[in-house]
Picture 1 (cartoon, rainbow, N blue to C red):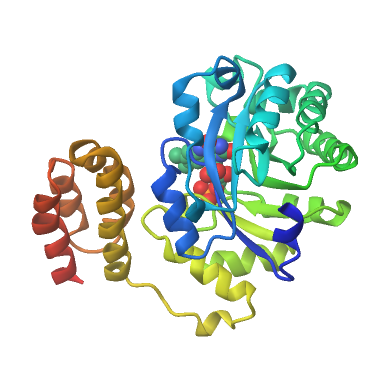
Picture 2: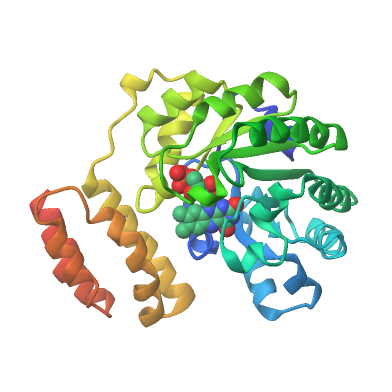
Length: 326
Ligand SMILES: Cc1cc2nc3c(=O)[nH]c(=O)nc-3n(C[C@H](O)[C@H](O)[C@H](O)COP(=O)(O)O)c2cc1C
């Protein structure tokens, strides 16, 4: 699949793995709105080895989310080998290894960004995944903490990972200790693009079509991976795709908050079918925060939204006034 994805003869748009966000409904919407590939949230390979029901739920998906990649985190090569093999027969097109998660729970198991501190071990993890018959990718940050020579070592590691046979690599150019502070250093992506033959995907601070244009101009990456920018703005995938299909960015239609709102209503309805009303409304609040921001009256709507538990109330007390304001 990675092969067919990158033989589209254009750059690609990927929907990012996002823990607690990129569920089955999110991925369906991402595809419908233009993402070429979607991703599960990160999944524990060790949890999968123990055959947790929770893991199977996270892996559950339908054909309208495909092509879909499964992302795993682990510091244990045996668990990675097991997961990569299993996932290959479950309809996934890519097995991605998380080398960027900075959360303590993940680091303490030697997984996520902890692999950046032990690149030899990271190679073992990659080798373990290579047993699978589907493409293997990795997603990394630019280092664990902020020293220049760390990035030099990571570049060398990426060249070795390429030799090991990975299909593509996504770079979020912030260090683990930065979490989400500062700006993503897109110049580092450009350096990786220059030295590698495999596709490099740019991630980090891509919030608008203008950002898509800028990051591609600066890096010439093979595509973009969009995370926070699509929360309550699925249309960004479509805009990016149009640009990659050759449309002049100045002619790409602007997306109004009202249009985003219409889509979010549909999204909530689908989440309700999936989770039930009460849990779906709670789940969707973290998305709606992104919709209800940046215009006069947004704060009041946000406050109201946080107290609502029923879809009909949400429609009447948040969406109706939203559409009237705009
Ligand atoms: C809420 C949230 C959850 C995330 N979960 C994951 C994850 O499970 N796996 C992963 O590789 N990255 C994860 N990320 C990182 C994103 O995939 C992405 O690399 C990062 O947010 C930078 O992109 P952005 O500026 O477009 O958000 C997460 C980010 C956010 C905001």
